[in-house]
Length: 206
Image 1 (cartoon, rainbow, N blue to C red):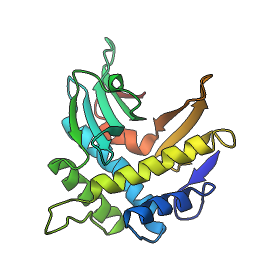
Image 2 (cartoon, rainbow, N blue to C red; image 1 turned 90 degrees about the horizontal axis):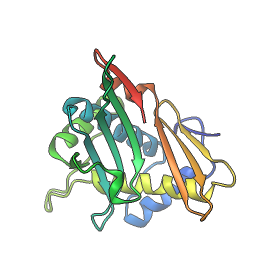
Image 3 (cartoon, helix red, strand yellow; image 1 turned 180 degrees about the horizontal axis):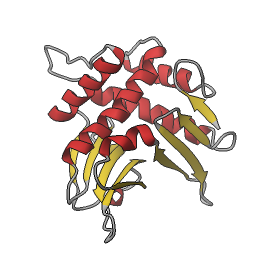
Image 4 (spheres, rainbow, N blue to C red; image 1 turned 90 degrees about the vertical axis):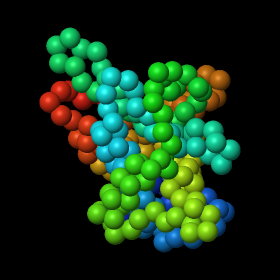
């Protein structure tokens, strides 16, 4: 299992891969910020989903430069006669059926989402996601896409070396290669993220 927290432990060349993707996009940052941004994104989506959870699935999507969803965070009600509860899940979007047809979907740069992300990032690490004054473009969407797409590439490239990547205290990713050679990535949120959607009912993990 490869471990990553961006401060003391490193997973192969993950930081280098992410930094290269960022540089190609024109983002030149110290590597210490990469994990801080990633953790803020993960925790921010969990906090947002906690604020909107209800009877229908709620989904936050991260899109590529062409508008295609590549990653999603979702909370949905679990039908359980004894306890009830909610399921928190994170996943790479492989086809349109991955997101429930009845889900309410918002983008990562939704107004409330941005506010929550900036609150968490500033509270935890002393930064906020900038908005370009002239264009009004917020950098959350491209930053989130680049980070998560680089992690996906890392998992695919290392599926025969180390199938498990643990983003310490946040999520665990496990890659599996199917018979046709396609790599599927399972993501399990850890307690720090699940805690955001807990209330007086149970919370399960997808």
